[in-house]
Image (cartoon, rainbow, N blue to C red):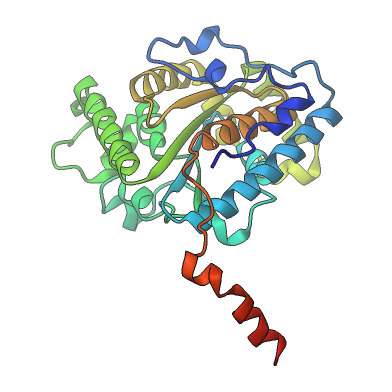
Length: 304
């Protein structure tokens, strides 16, 4: 069965192709744009998003009925990149039973007593469901790399001081993450990883809005400014993490995100395009024996 994929492209957005935003080992993040609006107004972008997210919701219903695949959507980005609002806007037409969002914060004491992937393993989506990771297992090669002292809290037997954390340590982590994702993919989890790429100036403006608007004050933390000073270090860590972990079974996509409406629409469009490549995902049909008895079943119900 061929899905009615990309019908929304008939509205004039056939220029959006997932491959154009796919990251590869030699992709240079610093050379990629952070702003794109596809020549559309904010109102038009919101309308396009509404169209595609409804199709994503219908796809999720089919995925649930099919019951042989799970979908894992991983979202990373600097502070203020728009992760929370993107999740809210893209997945709002999903059946609540079919999608689970996990926002990973600082590891708890219990989580630190397990390996760093444990809390992600137990949050993985079951077959037939979407799992959305808001911040992901990549925090373990991003935040901890910028702040290697955090690794000391993991109680690793071979790490007694920060100087024990060398390049070989990070290379092992990349290998472990790649093995983790390969195992998932080989067992029926479809993995899509998105980096919301914003400019440093756009982050500055969004942080200012958090301070200026009372309803957004709660989002601000002085630590946001401290982390902002480490912008270049984070960008370098993202560059290496993405280049070493983007594969056909677990690709990274870099989403220009200075425009939130455009980023949401692009994210949803890529996800829908890539998911509908799996033409074996279709709703099950009744057996020939049961189909032959439909009239009998209807008669029984109508006779009640």
